[in-house]
Amino acid sequence: MKVSKFIFAAVISFICSLAEAGHVRNLLTTSQKMPVINLMTGRSTVLRFSSPPKKVVVGNQNYFNIEFIDSDVTIQPLGHVASNLFVYGEGFTYGFILKVNQSQEYDDLVFVRGGAPAIIQNLEDPKKSARPKDKLFSVTPLEKYKDISLTGSAFKWSDYVQCYYADLYLTLKRDKVDTKDVSIRIGLDADLTKIKPVFESDDLKKSVRVRVFAEISSALPKAVIVKYKKEEFRFNIKWKK
Image (cartoon, rainbow, N blue to C red):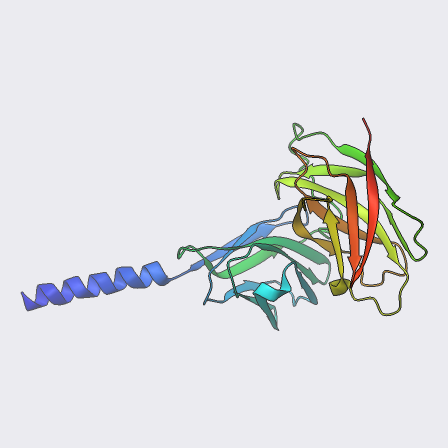
């Protein structure tokens, strides 16, 4: 009887250890995909690349602790908040959607493999032709702004992130502008921005491409709001048929 109890306890302990363990997996990706990385609070997840990353941009910096170790990027969530992550390396840029799960279904170690141009270039799925139509638009400033300009032409649908995205071109002629101090909101009363915008460059004195993600399937926003520190700039959207 004692042996049976011992075996039973050992089996239960083994099952519990499996339940607490995360996943180790290989991930094949390209610049045109936004695969999901499953995280868990209290645990760190490692993304291992074939060559050392040079820069990492996370959408919500307040809720994720990011560190570099050789070819690894370690991610530790600090709360139950979803975000996006872009990893820049020699000849590649990969985009990911970070999701913090309540359950034990999280990634311990992810071997990231692939090799394609930057995510900023394309999010369309070439294999799917039945995607929603592009929503064409133009933007005009609410008033004459001396040192800021914004242009854009179309919101396109991405199956990878399940929402519309648009490439806006922003110029902000100020000294030592930090993109952390710049925010872009799609919509006036309601913020339809789904993922934090991605800036192609930190130098906003010249026209810089900014990729924005918005939920505009059911409602078309009337304006784009650019905020720099305490200053707010409104650009009205005119939709084309």
